[in-house]
Length: 309
Image (cartoon, rainbow, N blue to C red; front, side, top):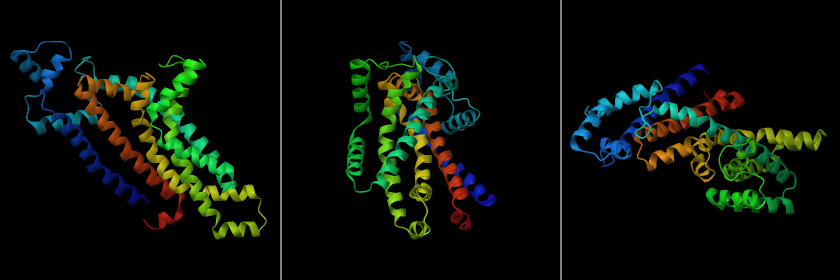
């Protein structure tokens, strides 16, 4: 197990380096001069002297790979540079925006897990019934509905018509409800199908027949079926956590939620390259680390995987 962990940790190092290099390269492929952009976003008419001074200030006069390795080393220490717009450290802006995004993602994750498990178990128990068919139809429809459209509908119904929630912002604890529901709907449809199909498949296994022969209660059998259906769902759930955080971009802008997704969109409109680079790097590292943690969790839960190490 220790050797497996060491191999997996060492394997993600080149992946993270590749992500960091792509984040740096893609931003610097833009034809516009970052020094000129840094001046224009502050409504300064650039001159040749001012552009040259800004290039020196931003370190753009150094060779390309020197700038990359300098940025990488600083990023590993939590220093992502200075914002072109606010002239504040990027790490400070991310630190201020990230808690709001984590709060939104956490509430959405609770909704996803609770609703998906509840509906999946009921659909498994009443397989082939009207309830099962209606739930599958709703799941299919919700999968096809884009999140921005769902968010607008929820605002129109629960904020404008019923006046139950605020239309935007983070003023009250209840403000998180509508954006969390909007963010979770697409994931709920995925997990309902995944858990339901796995449970129905496991219902036909021999251990279920043996449990019924032993006279176990149906509730106990359903618990065993559910437990044996979790491995694939846990893997998907582990990868959904970074997708939840990265997927808040649209939802945060619809509901004016002051998170990292909204910060990134604002940075794109302002051509604030340091923030965009930091966002790409953080999201990429988050996906890689979550994938590693899910693999480790699967080896702990499933003894068959430990035998293959």
